Image 1: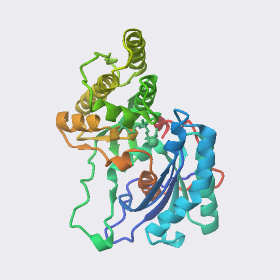
Image 2: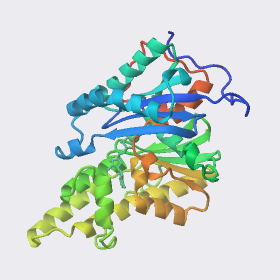
Image 3: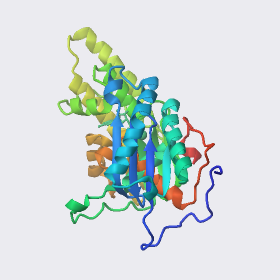
Image 4: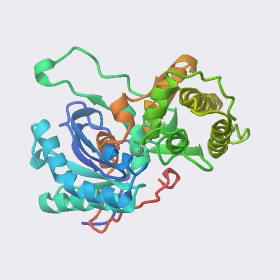
Length: 365
Ligand code: KG4
Ligand code: ZN
């Protein structure tokens, strides 16, 4: 096989009577071992996610060596189950897409090597994809209803370009203008902690478990978002974000409260912190959408599972906001297949010498 190549025709979309393109995808960039089969970048035929979150919870975060070992144990059963659920074998798929980066090196290598092994043994094309770009493509996905339970529901609306996209995950916070498929104008990112990282760190500060995002969301439901007025970093003349000042403000408040009270007001702290993050993320995204005359907004990545964030976007946005269903916000392989499809159409084919890229910014695509 040759190294990565891309064909000259970027807009090659198959005719409606063309046979469906099925991509088998593998994701192992962090602490989820996942595989999926997706048709035409949109219809999920099957998707399995084996989460290690419970295991890492006892360390208060992802323990990289444990993650790699768990990926090794889980990956073949996960792929087998995925194919079985879709009633397919490897001969029924057109290509194998795999997360190349960014992510934990030891975790990425497991998925990459398995994908290479499958490509070598079947002769199927191999496509290495960027995990952040894949998060964006979760907005195009929907679950194909089982044939025995066909509903007459239409697939969700297709996002329309130009799109203003916000990616908020455990490792990244990025604002990107998407003018077409696979076409990005990088606007800004976090200067320090990612939004998800801030949720995870603040959760630990106030005594909540890993992963911190869902724990803070749950605690915040009982809290007052105005109980503490935590700072918002607006960084006015840029599209960048910063969450480390907010994290430090929570830390200072926790230290102060520990001097004067026996029990922390966890719900109020969680609600006030969450409100500060949500306000900055939503306001900046809406402002960028207006400034760059985006038609619609797309929000993706683990933090987009957050209920307050979803509600605030839906309430305040003057245009359609695409936010994937919860199970597609956090790491999964269906999104890898989603972007893999568009890269497949463009003619991307990667060789067996392809290596993982643990630090692969979206701006380098
Ligand atoms: O996209 P993702 O699953 O993995 C990465 O690529 O990083 O994102 C994981 C991040 C974690 O920081 C987690 O705390 C956060 O997403 N997260 C949430 C929620 N669910 C997951 N943050 C806020 N609210 C949630 N409901
Ligand atoms: Zn992710």
